[in-house]
Length: 69
Image 1 (cartoon, rainbow, N blue to C red):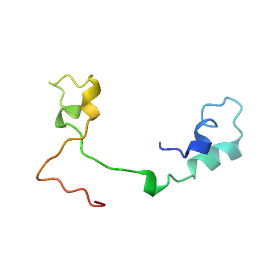
Image 2 (tube, helix red, strand yellow):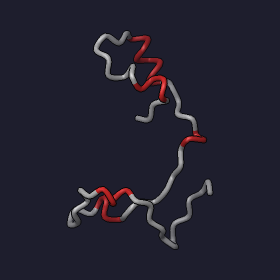
Image 3 (cartoon, helix red, strand yellow):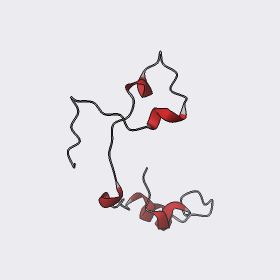
């Protein structure tokens, strides 16, 4: 779940009211802050060790086009 920064600290609180939870669930993340990119194909490869920091580095694939570029 992506949360806008003002709501990040509300989520883990034990004393959240139902109204707080509903506010969090119905919040939307600003699209202008989302920056899609492709990652390594090894991320979901069960035979590859994906437990490395570099697994989330941006990868470029000729056959993949990011639509909001």
